[in-house]
Length: 314
Image 1 (cartoon, rainbow, N blue to C red):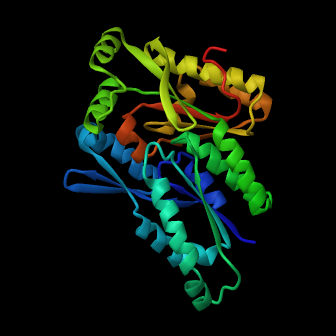
Image 2: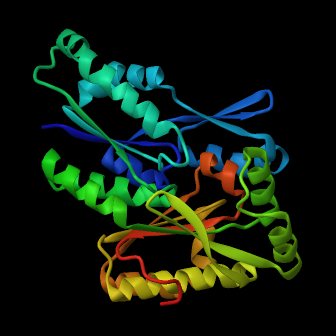
Image 3: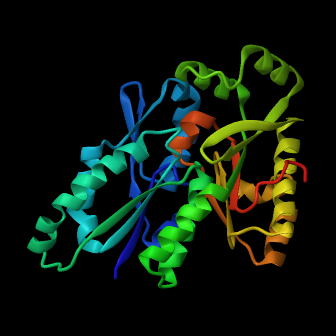
């Protein structure tokens, strides 16, 4: 059976990993005034976005995911021919309509797939499962990487489905934003109150940065730490301790709002990498998607793994 994995463009994994495992991408359109950028996880295009467009137009940018009909069209055009079973993994449904749109599309795809397969001489049934990762960015990457690695090992669809359903409730994603001003103004535009005026004023005056946890579809600040560098270091130190205590995946994902080549120089990374090597954990480092950047700003650092959620600092 030919099994494929598809993820939306906000899923942070290295470009080489996408290519090696043949992971398909559901693009997201970013509107910047009169301009449009289609986020298809092209690293060079994403770097240009960070350098040339985000700072000037990020506050007013709007992300536009594919509609259910557009997703249907993409599947019927190619994916139903290339695969017999597809796992479509999306950003948490609490943050985007992509999961809802893909779920709506799946009903039409499973009704209409026979015609294009028959015309192409492809026999047998086609199946599709849409999976809400209940996380975002490199957290979604953890789930997509697990699915791709299981496919590579020859696992059957039911085994993969059970593993993903179990793992998605145990993905721990952490993030340190590089710019509270950006986060606050994006929040105001979207009607969110995650960084209030008083908290923002205090945080800016004292250079305090939050460490944000994403877990089971919810995001919340779990620590406030003086300086960006120290916040990133504390986050990496916490994750290193989790690796030592034991996690449920043999990989963890890191994404950065800018050139991912800068990640090894971030405070705390050296120890995290050493612990990962000792534990046989693969680190998958990527540029944070343009779709994510619209909401988090530049220099945001995120890390995620599958495993037990423990109190920050433990």
